[in-house]
Amino acid sequence: MRLDKFMKVSRLSKRRSEAHEALEHGRITKDGKALKPAYHVKPGDVLVVHYATKFVTVRVIDVPLRVTPSVKGADLYEVLETRKDEPADWI
Image (cartoon, rainbow, N blue to C red; front, side, top):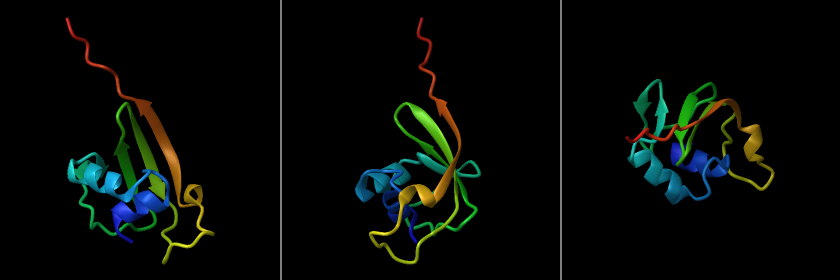
């Protein structure tokens, strides 16, 4: 499954277009490298998602073959770390 679609299905982003934009701007990384929207997610991938004010590190547990109403977003990943993005100290 494409990463932009996985972000939507797993509810890590509200909309697929929002996930696509985040990927194009390099706000979702794996091993320190920015990922493209067409990247195919695999179980075991560790992703770092940069939201507006925080970083969330998740490990992909499962990737569904197709999207059905029975797919629960929280069952697809586990949160490894969450940290706040510290504001710049302007003097």
